[in-house]
Length: 175
Length: 370
Figure 1 (cartoon, helix red, strand yellow):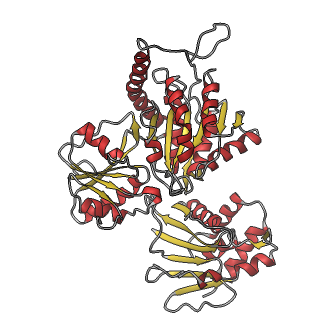
Figure 2 (cartoon, rainbow over the protein chains, first blue to last red; figure 1 turned 30 degrees about the horizontal axis):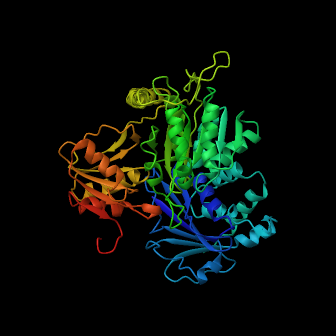
């Protein structure tokens, strides 16, 4: 089982990102579940969402304690949240940032999802959309296939800029 | 067709296929998505249902009863305090023999205010004459909703059915869902006591001491008859759609020395606990109780029994545990866990089984008793 924890702020689309990743994994022929932690969170507050991907049906409903991968859609949450908490040894971090991450002893990748969204003019109510481009980065990292990433995006969104942003993230994600 | 869905949306999709004539509803977290989705189907003209947005849950159930007595199919959904607010009318629906189908997204009762999963809401409805089924996956939420209409409306039943799904854990999780073309799986409703203006009859009249018990017995008679209808419906569902359901979902029980029983998503998590205990050499099994009313006959002979309740009856005990005890005369270990969304992992469940103390009750996470 491969477990992903997504850190974002309320309103940034972390929940939708989790759903898109699960949908893409299902289109890859795997089993997947996606769920947020629903607390007293509000718009702008740090939130977490979870994705599980497995070859067999998934019976676990409790939260993910030991993720294989952590995705940080908003680097500013790291000021108050330990995003590496519980990360399995050998686990991976994907950070939305134009700059190489400063994590020590962790396999980390970065991609400027915000920059890509702004470049594609993928902005809703003043916020850049991060949850479709992040699928491109995850496809590059081998979590889902690029084909299924596109399929999942196409099933949930009609605007082609989403797929273009995912392509850009696929190209630009770097260690 | 393989798609993905939340538990809430899966219920709404099944309702859309069952085509109720009337849906009356009032929103409440974490159920709201169900009635929102149905409202969207109606607005998009994908579903020709009279959608009545009422001012309270009491009215939602009253509207379903009022519509139902004309002989049409009805549906509503609720949670927690919404269900409690309906309570007078849930009794009425069963007594008036209106086969309303309702999804209840299980949520704790306040105070303290809490929006997360707990079964005490539905447990407080257990003596109303409603059939109750508890589901544990998005697929099962969809399947059980389709079956609920067929069971409720069967001539030998004509009692309302409540489908229970865990708040957030199941209502808001996204999982794969196979949605089928249902064909004639749910036959048209023929309510024998439907209002017919050409044959005027009295409804809701006073029933005296010489009559009232007969109506009560009639509910129980139908509750007993519903067992056969449930079995036939589940068998027919499996024949048509290839997914098998029983009174319980049993996992590695055949040779088990200890069996853990629970309701809802805890029962899936328990299967993981069983697998890990088996690796330690403990022969454990899981029996996820699906039907709570009518209460299933359980095969627990000679085994240690651990029951997890995500509910409580104050001054009495875990409702599932004490029900099993009463019906099976077993000595069991009663665990109270998961109240108000308390996190319970498969490691925790493995611990309950490993450290069982027969005859005792254990509140998970309560200091001094851990």
